[in-house]
Amino acid sequence: VFRIDDIRKIDNNRQLYEVDLKITSNDDQQIRILTSRIREEIDASGWYRMGMLLVKIGQFDKAEELYIALLEQSFDDSEKGHSYFWLGWSKDQQGQHQEALSFYEKALEISRKILPDDHPTLAHIYSNIGIAYNNMGDYSKTFEFYDKARQIYEKSPPPNHLDLAICYAKIGSMYDYRGDYSKALEFYEKAHQIKEKVLSPYHPDLAISYSNVGQAYNNVGDYSEALEFYEKALKIKEKALCTNDPSLAASYNNIGQVYKNMGDYSKALEYYEKAHQIKEKALPSNHPDLALSYNNIGAVYKYTGDYSRGLEFYEKALNIGEKSLPVSHPDLAISYNNIGLVYKNMGNYSKALKFYEKALKIKEKALPSNHPSLAISYNNIGQVYKNMGDYSKAFELYDKAHKIREEILPPNHPDMAISKHDIGLVYENTKEYSKASQLYERAIEIAQLSLPMNHPHLQLYRQRLQDVKNKL
Image (cartoon, rainbow, N blue to C red; front, side, top):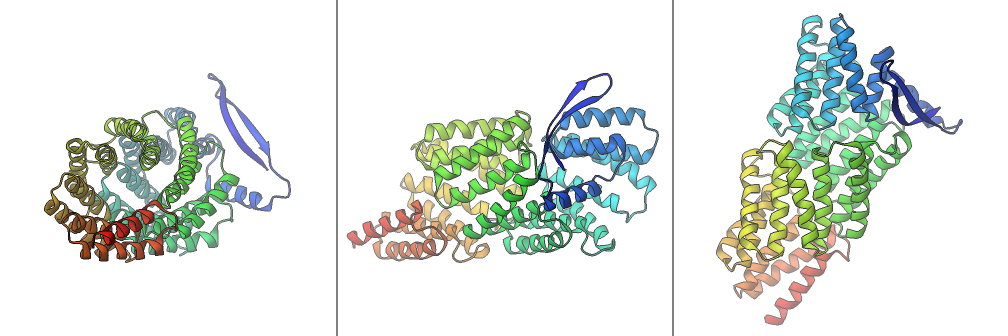
């Protein structure tokens, strides 16, 4: 069994490619099982199989060149639909989501003419149209097409088919986006149970499943469980994928996120930079995933007090986002929020407020009214008003954030501790020391259940409590 390290075109006229292979251990049974499964998945012949392989290993330009040539030569509708589908997938992977949608719609138009309404191929196309809408930030359309796919898959035997698992995972991601983390975890686990039954232990799709479950645990503040699932995913990817595969970058990014949430910023930066190195090699310079990478690295610098460096990375992320995303895309809100945070920490409150309100405007249009991300925005704007000495306005916004968090998050989530602390800070500044003390104590109780003992937030809450007790 060989592993592909790189593919290079060596003859433009004859479409010849040079493939670098690395031999694996002859007795590696798991790799043999994985290879057999991938052969089943790439269910095509000749050049079509080659194109699918190129897309799967991230060689997008080569795959597109091949599929365009096949389209020009083909008179068969089924083959044309196949080529349009994979051209769409390739474009989506490169962040060119509108172009991806156009190719998927061509594939759908052809496939509807030649296939019955409940054919699994139509479900594949609906699912990928959903992905394109998801990447463009149109989540109602996303859910609509994922659900169309689910209805077909649930009719198609067998009940534990891999495509159904993938569909459950996508629906889980929609609940994740809506902030309904318990429902997200339910669908992620349904998907995971199917995948464990039908996939080899080192299949890349099983890694996706581990990542999804890890994300659900990360969202509810269970960082040790999140790290366990993310590391399982990484172990599979390191064994099964090329060293520059963008999916590896996603795993490094996820693990970095957990370390950041746990307050281990040097470890977070280490994983974020690993992810960034892969993305820089594998993706176009304006790809939204590079913006995510810049945002993450910027966050570490911000948390360690290097605000000018943090701002530099946040502005790189915003520059990509403003060029590649719709003006109301939630990822732009992330960039505006991050830049606002840096300006707040630098004491430039008017600029901080300007960027925070830009973020809030997008979120209020795009998200449910009780979404945790809205709570973050209300909290951030509240901090600016608190720093400006407008304590009644600060309290109003902190209270809005707190009510959302009480409704949607587990009672021991770290964000609940943040809300208790921030409201306590208003009481301290208005000299209501007894109320402040009670809230700081509650923040400490929550943080002790959900954060490492040396986490900076926990240290801050303890210091606040000590300070206010000295004022009583």
